[in-house]
Image 1 (cartoon, rainbow, N blue to C red):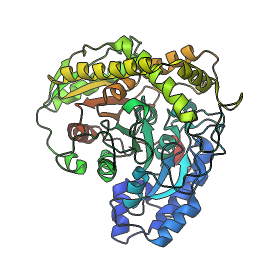
Image 2 (cartoon, helix red, strand yellow):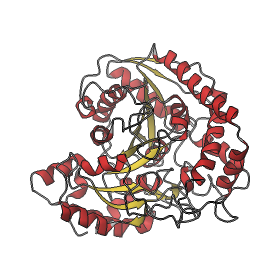
Image 3 (cartoon, rainbow, N blue to C red):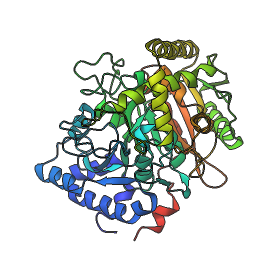
Image 4 (tube, rainbow, N blue to C red):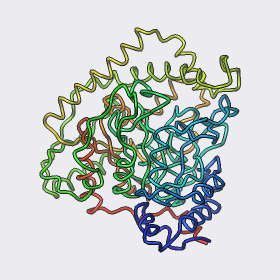
Length: 481
């Protein structure tokens, strides 16, 4: 490996500290990231659009002295608009899109934090899956087992971070697209509270408020500091999350007090949860009790069977709207321009009425009130991260002819994530466990609406009790070079 040899010993804040102390330069960190990308990306297929020239120009022009000054960073090939840089949404339909002419506000804030963008990461077509196996660019593979999925839709971001090409990367989450891959690949993944990160200037909300931007990180403190760097409303936003009492980074390591914690084994869609995921959940519940918290086995009373139908109505309608945003095409997609599931959701979306859409939004809001009622008694809800470990590539296939079977598989794999997109609550995936095969197992921590602070406090206790930073896939150690 060329570049800074100690690169993988540090998280993003650690690398930025070295830059600030002039112990290493941003160019040396970029070279270290590019060397790892050259060695590991061919194995996992995480980075699909190189931006090395963009990165070197940014460094030459001078980086702002933000909290992540000089840290190499990757942007998902979805939502993160950068002026002059192409974005394909990993779809044949959008592959010829002209580059955006302006940065999104989220990208502006990432730049202000001092991050150095050097590539875009693979995703599924238009973010419509919890795996990353698009026809346009090919599948992203899990660094822990190259025969398994990395999760999705932020699968490229996750694989690049788990492969230690970067210490963190940009992601988005509309029904688990940060948290599911975090669980698959042993990373920290937070879906922030609805409205915490702005979507300005291109949207007021995404997927009726279900979708959020944030990132995948190796450490909890990076997750908190990244949110500090990006959080807050943009001009003209229709709504915003309640402001935090203080920076989230200060919550990492702060005393959470004696929390009231519930845990549930029950998937809201009635799906089966595997034995290893249940054992991991119970282990974390016991650990929380050992840390002095009040812990109970308690199932929220919610309309679980309403979650997936409401989501599918919203995603179908959103697919139509998203396909209308191609800046140069004023027509419907042609045969062969969309994957089968995307085509089916587009066709379903054409049949969704305005009343159907409002009913689905009202269902989401009703689920939010039902879950909020549960949180009147509990500070945090623990759930399994997924129903089991990452499945094999090819099982969640957007080229399936039967879209209903496709979605059945999606929510059999990840039955607990879409719940909190619908309610808007913050949900944090932590890589606290390992399966008998040595694969990552995640646990999801869910807080009250607007209360990421409690999740960071509890998460820091769990990270100290069961540290994960030094746990690396064999792929990393075998490509040190």
